[in-house]
Length: 117
Image (cartoon, rainbow, N blue to C red; front, top):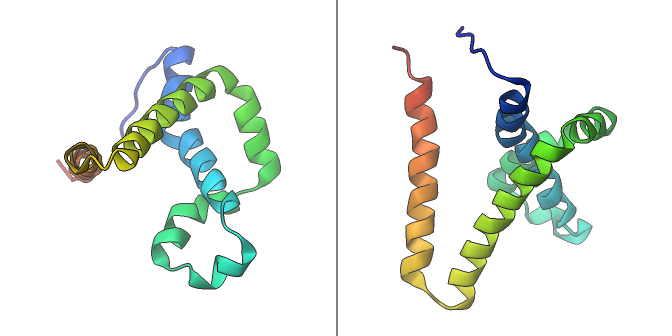
């Protein structure tokens, strides 16, 4: 275990990005699923939306207590969605690939940061 001292604002920002936004995104993704398509879901969809099964009352309270940081984090997510969408709309394979490569690099860095030292 490692401890880290943060200001309240830094804590709220960190948790908005690393805990609250993933739950929000998982909930949004789960909301896009029409019931008639549920039978087509596999591990990718189920893994990605797993945390959306959390207690709605608890998550409502968390979102309401951290609204300012959440809105900033959601804005960043919207920015990334827009960049991906724009690349797709414009059939810009190079831009799409670059964004996906950066996402892959960011995700792989998580594994490195969790490795025993």
